[in-house]
Length: 158
Image (cartoon, rainbow, N blue to C red; front, top):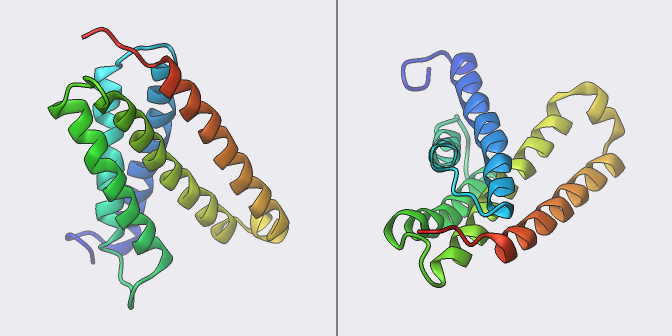
């Protein structure tokens, strides 16, 4: 039991939060490229991404795991993103901080999605390790390209 839920239910909630965070995160990044704020989707992305990391810490584990490290790094990226977005209102350098930290947090979620997919989906597991490396490299390149475009083009009006 985790938070009063059977582990299978908790896992489903955690995965749902992660997938919502990833989907809304990609939409938010595409919005940045169009210089759109997308306030509601941005809030959804940030909240579900924070909750994904926080719920990840509640799984039964022994010691520090790669998942714990990624969760901590994601939260470290999310704090300046949230502060830049909601405290600094994207003024000055906070715009760049918001874009970079948001894309980084999205990449952490995508990274874990790929890891978990290759671990849990037998057809993908059979393709590892080469396909895993290709998938991770493709995700990294995609998010670097999208992040670079977003950093250059995201100039929302106040």
